Length: 212
Length: 285
Image (cartoon, rainbow over all chains, first blue to last red; front, top):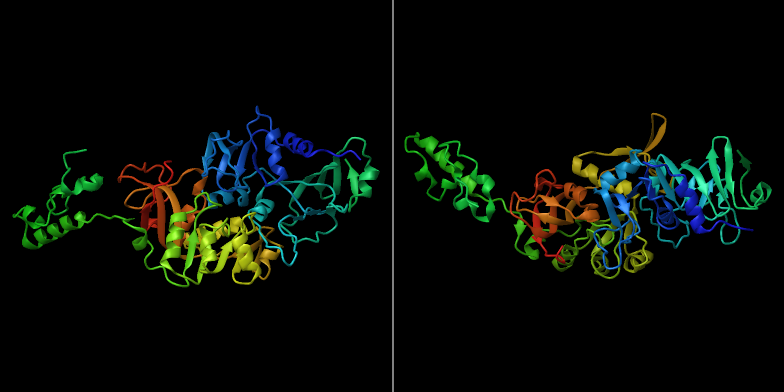
């Protein structure tokens, strides 16, 4: 089965982000999206630690310990960018000012519930960061993830078995096999990996799918 | 720089004071000395002259929040205190103040920070020294949070995990005198279990409480002697709100600048929120 690469998934997300949007890219796979945003488009990247207009990684030797992203990696500030404190940064999320956030996930349910912060394992040390604020606060939540777990189970499920990050918050899922919208009428497949049929996709997806 | 009012009180560049005039004799306050009463016009009635002299004397007192050393800056932090520590990872973390807190010796602390320490230094060293009973944070688990991980797994530290935006808003609320607030973040999740909820305009909200602190240790870039602060880049993060939420805010700053040098239009934390400032020259930035 041919699958989209991680960069192709990131391209799919990037092409769906309109110019002028304020966007938060989560830690991990979503950070790849930044590499695929068209330079000619003005898109404002928000970093939860207090940056709007976040730019790419600095050249070697130009790193600044006071200028890092949510993953604590060195970044830069674009011309016109701004710094602000944590309460303002999270007011941007919680107050509904961010247009899009892109996050990874363990599971997404058919109603858009998101689980991405905790496996629930008894010996796991829980850490939530800004995930719940983003899930609940951003106008649209996009999820990027592999379609199946390493053992072949569908990560799109009827009900999440992992602890929830937010309820009914996910608008669209980008996987290595498909792009799927979560709507009040159900899950609608917008795109599929080349050569894949809906029947094949359905056979490995935990909930009913339909085409537009 | 000498202006027409500049005089003895202008040492330390406190020129703002010099523009003020005594309400009693209308002379510029730089005239005030130990013998201020003598410089007040004898024509004033005796009581009025005394008041005038007092006014002169008061303007002689220089408000100076710059502490000369760490030891004096950290005095009075008690066992059992709630201590906020600014920073997101190491950006904005007041490492020198944390080292001084370890040396100061207070224990049984409740620490409020976004994380739970990295590596072996700073907050991790405070944890390793066994001074912390409880930590309130959003993201304890990191690749290098081994000190916290070991304490947590052995039940030696209590964790109050709170979503990062709730953490920030709970701190902000404390600083602003808010008794609690309803937020949609966390509704329907483990982190909102047993909390009061309310349906407001068709949306579900969770009641969250403020986090007050006895002490805030914050890292800023520049300060003046009134405690006005500005920060550097994304190291600002929790500094401004923690400074508001604590009874005593101690700021570690790279630079101390003369009063008036910080542009009033860009001061991020006004001095009212800062009680003590310690100059810790950084790496030249």
